[in-house]
Amino acid sequence: MNLLGLIVEYNPFHNGHLYHLNESKKITNATHTIAVMSGNFMQRGTPALLDKFTRAEMAVRNGVDLVVELPTLYACQSAEIFAHGGISLLNSLNCVNSICFGSEIGDIDILYLISKILIDEPIDFKIKLKDYLDKGLPFPKARASALFYYITENKLYDTSEEDLLNMLNSPNNILGIEYIKSILKLNSKIKPYTINRINSGYNSLNVNDSICSASAIRNALKNNSLDTINYTMPKDTYDIINRVIESGFNLVYNEDFYQILSSIIIRDKDNLTDYFEVNEGIENKIYNSIFKCHNIETLQNEIKSKRYTMTKISRTLNNIMLGIKGSDILKTKDLTNIPYVRVLAFNEKGCEILKEIKKNSEIEVITKFSKIKYINSNIFNTLINYDIKATNMYNLIYYKDNFDMLKAPLDYITSPKYIK
Image 1 (cartoon, rainbow, N blue to C red):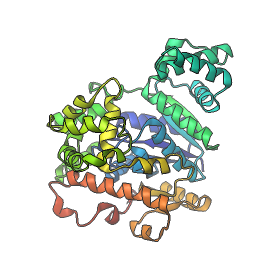
Image 2 (tube, one colour):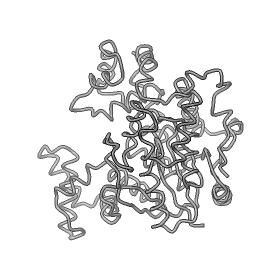
Image 3 (cartoon, rainbow, N blue to C red):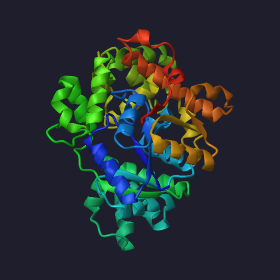
Image 4 (cartoon, rainbow, N blue to C red):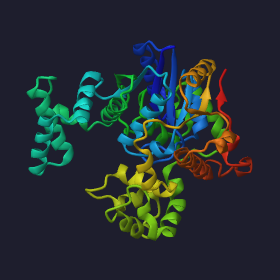
């Protein structure tokens, strides 16, 4: 078995994802594929358009063999924590041969070189970084300049300082570097590959091409009928979204949670700093802004400053809503072994991967939630309880018009989807 690992969100699965999947299989010569996928909340601190089981089904119907859940505590955080969670989970399986990710640069050599320098921190690099910081440069610019100095001084790669800075400011390059850093930290045998992203940038709302961003698809679904963008996604994705809509479920957007979020902020006014990244006075700005705003977008704009980007604010608000405590992030963010793998969907080849995991790893494979009560581990309980909480919170909106169908917390009554 040559097992390819992917770390994904599929929000929702579209033509760009299909291209990435097929190209990744090709360049790694993979026989089997496992995707570690975010659950019901995304890395930028926003909810998924569709629930995790539905998105996992999309992935398997389009060629992924096994989809497992990236624990919520990692899925909703910075690139560093998100990447470490995904790589640590894949590494814990003891049978994954490679990963492949999309990047703006599409060159694994320079991404690996940068990652190695950042991990090893050679003395010449550290001295230059300190010099640039002492001169008042912002950290990202100082780090890029120090990297450029070290790389060119040692003739390691031919690049310009401007190109290097642009590379380090590109979101998928940043994520790729964090994947490789985690592989190096864990001394993992997983081999990294990258391919060029061919779709629009993450925030582009252009849907004129067959390959466009997931943001553009979500925006179009909010404003138009599904039929107007059917060319942007595989038929299976189209059919599944259509099924969800016709069944009366709600496509979920960030603003749907404003009443829940504002209630929690008001209730927890004196304890907001317990939540991850709520510090340095932002808790006061968040609380005071609640009374001036009527939706999440205006709230984020009210809080925004030079110090806090919109993405950082979005993640911080999401941490408050999901109750993600800083103490729990500190306890889990550097784990070298994730204690469980939650199966969401699989096919026949996925069964073969699960057998390989059970043969090579001691990780708890969760297909039925009833077994979690027998697992006695503080770290396990911390991680899994956030997954349950995130699903329950998400379903307040997803099932809003179908609440009679929700007989119990969904994680306990939903089995992984087997796609024949």
